[in-house]
Image: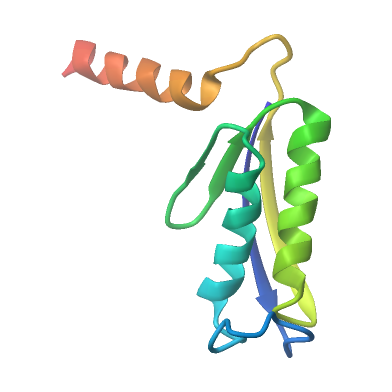
Length: 109
């Protein structure tokens, strides 16, 4: 499965890690979430608005949960937006879908 998600804090920071500069800054919170994703070892891609991660249901959802918890330290509440493509038996789709799109554009361009 591929999950695209975006997570952001709001409200007053609770216990943002020391040394993170402006604890209320969203980029520090997003960096904490992306660090969790990258350290997971699962295929992932971060864009300007969403991070995508690919793997099995339980492992992907565990990473999303831990990333959300990491952001939770930067505010009294957290907003999570999640979209999932659940396609059992397929892997490598994080890049495969984009490759097929590029091929279609080349063929029709």
